[in-house]
Image (cartoon, rainbow, N blue to C red; front, side, top):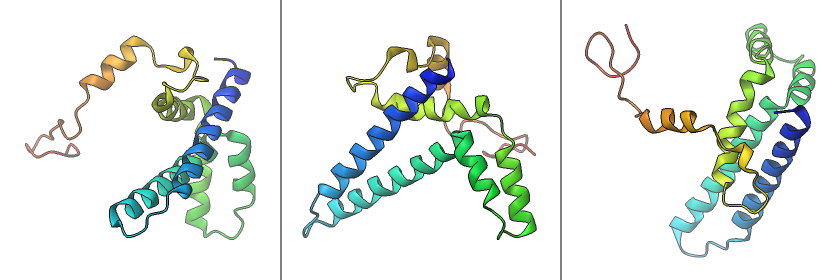
Length: 140
């Protein structure tokens, strides 16, 4: 995908996040505690997705990196490490997040994963891997 096409997808995703945030803020929870929790969860989800979006968008991340002068030495090492991840390795994060909006009229079919990538997603089961000790989790 060309850079311009990716920028279009990023703008599409930003617009969907604005819509989600606006819809969540429009809900008046009242006495229903479940509605208030759901509203808070949607707003937290939007905030987390925006952070991921900032990480994927290289120019913004580089700007944040240059402003990180007040960090400790180890925090700067972490920032440098994360900032050094090439954008082509960060892009799949956005492809996965955008896929949730496939039913939107402005969604483009080319943003969907390839068929064999979808098959890999179906095969994945969280916690299905086991270590050499027979316990679930990281291998020893």
